Image (cartoon, rainbow, N blue to C red; front, top):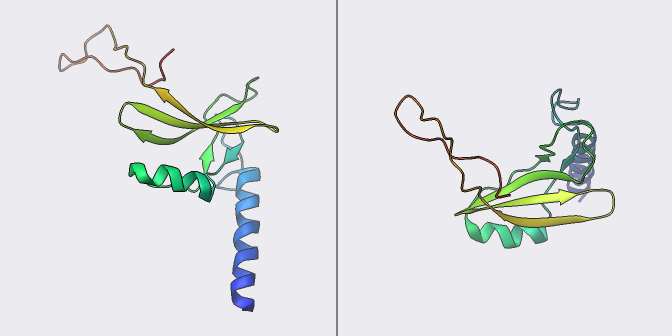
Length: 119
């Protein structure tokens, strides 16, 4: 029993440290230094859609942003499922892709799609 308990404590401590200072022991240089993770209950809903579970979800916004943190949790068909959080609220949000495409054609004559959410 002790090896299991020790492993669980070590895993929890490692996750807490990672969420606090980033995967490599320091915050990312070009982004918000906050991280989150998908809970087992949330994953039970998301795994039915077929994507892999990522252990850590870094906030993808610029450093010092004023609103809630946000990270991509999963891509499903024509929607992104994102985690939004702050110190008081945490939620999974489904957002549609932006329908816009680049007005200037690339070297092959195609138009790159927008990689943001609609709106």
